[in-house]
Length: 529
Image 1 (tube, rainbow, N blue to C red):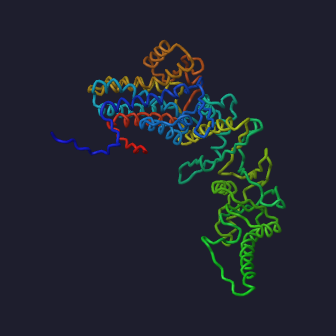
Image 2: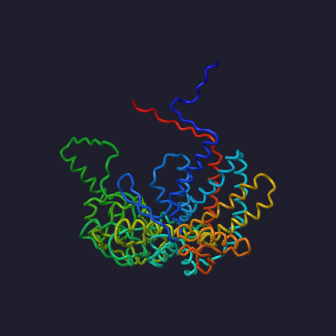
Image 3: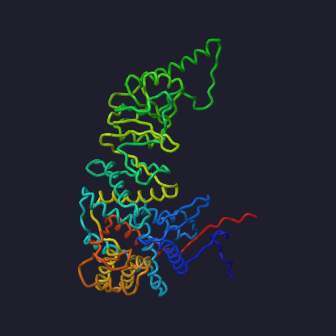
């Protein structure tokens, strides 16, 4: 008898075939079941203890899954979906996981009947084209310059979140901040939220004190107590070089042969600093910011010239200040020119909030970067408000990119579901059954909304299905508060089309990817003796 050949390492664990596919589906279901209860306005919060002992209280799908440690590879890939959704469009992190989980669940019966996964995948991809076409057909255009219409959409995003009880405060902050950083580059709109909107969280104070500054605030104080802490119409110079003696890169040796040599070396260092300061002073600035250090000797000359100095700024803060005051960051003070000086700031002031000193560059003319100040009761509350604000700003940005919206409350999902059912009737191949199953999977969103607010699921779901099947009105959805069927246009529940498109594509593509896996090889580490 022939000896079996071992190709893989003896420590390697391998699973194949149906077992793997069904295991992946089970893992996806488990991840989806964790966050199903966080969908909709009647959603529950989750409290998660991270390994460091920190507390996270949130109902943001991405924030929850980010903290959970899973070992199954399919579950890891599901969690990655939520992160992608959050980075791309900022909203729909819960929906994408719930949808992807359901799409895999409806594929299970076909795998158990030994249908080839390729057939299911082809049907899903075909269905995606129909679904995208349906979304484009039912989209409603929005006027981005009308604040009331923008508020309706952002209210929907925050309707399921912690900050909805504070009214329109956070939505208005989001709209204002996004408008400030919107710029035209090469005939396209560029809105970079990550780099040019800084959120400063300061515990204490009232929530009503949250605001968008017409400029930048940095958690820094001036270097020396003798410097001015308030300058009207400052001339700002930004540097990314140190104003101190040059230190050697590695160990530096200096050989002195005469008794005057040491003094000579000190004088050379002082002359170098003096020259740096003279190069800065001749531009007549009133504020100088540098990313590196400032020596006492340099401070002496700058105080005499009446210049306020900030040192060791972050690179990102310096970039924001440059955008807001119209300055250019210079590497060497000798290269300074008049056009590098920022003149569009109206007020430079250092204020004390709580125990911290904050430097404000305010009243800027047309700043292309801004700071959002958040005040609140405690750190946990502020962290949750910041997460919600980020979602709101992302949604405002998506609306600027593509000013079309879709109805929320499960209305769009039901419209897509009906379109797929109609299309399935025209398919004559074996792919018709998975196509119909995918149409049923879309109903998970309205069903989950009903589950979370405790309405009669079967009766209401049948009514909703009938309304969508009968007419051409794709506006009927579920009121997440009461569980009743309502016209979403009257309830003013809207979502940007980009969010829905991203949710749909991500969910279908990821379920196709997981269905095509038929072998998992995991190289286990050798157990230590």
